[in-house]
Length: 117
Image (tube, rainbow, N blue to C red; front, side, top):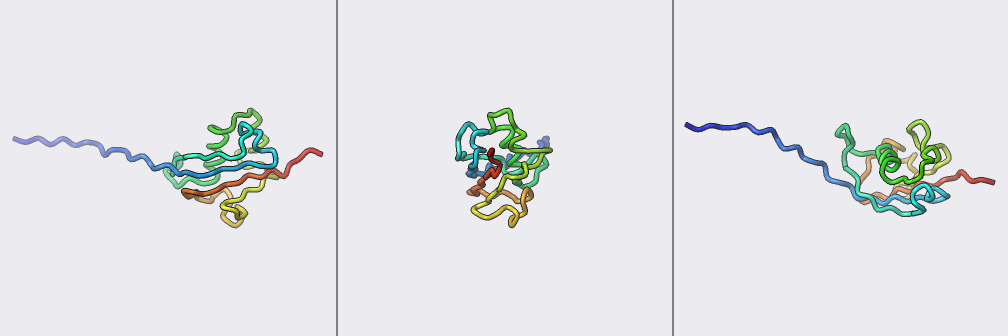
């Protein structure tokens, strides 16, 4: 007499993406005065979809930013106006802005154009 037991399929974790994130124009002060960050982030978001720039911005606020002045980087869950974003040296407007799906090896540059005067 043989018995078979069913086991639940093992949950497979999505691989991480290695990306480089850089900050200039004063934004680096929000991120430990460090201009360049080499990050490893989950390849999928909480919903199981490919991770996007919007997910990256959330990740940066929750895990990388050490400054309490989050409003200098985001407003109403979106990147603050006056911050330019380059994805692999191309304007993010050409790449789909916050909907751009991150790829391993991407270089994301955030540049603040907001300066005192």
